[in-house]
Image 1 (cartoon, rainbow, N blue to C red):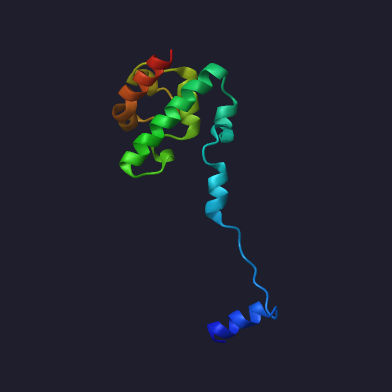
Image 2 (image 1 turned 30 degrees about the vertical axis):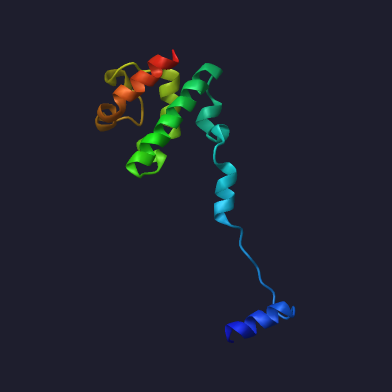
Length: 118
């Protein structure tokens, strides 16, 4: 059936169209909600503030590298960092989700953010 014939039958009500929900609209609703992460819900108020700082830092790094934020660190790792408050790369390496490369690459930034939040 040619496109114009399909359109005509839709306008006449002879044919129905079912539209799917726009996935971009669904994503837009959840953006910016800091409490969306289960890891966030388990933190104290003091640790939540640091968690938010770490997430903001992670977004900046991810944008600069052109990767999704979870590639830098997962929320659970950031929550553990916020709770444990490591001050150097040795302490950072004790946290699940942090390997030698990430500790070397991001350790100084994280230590600075932790110290500033203290």
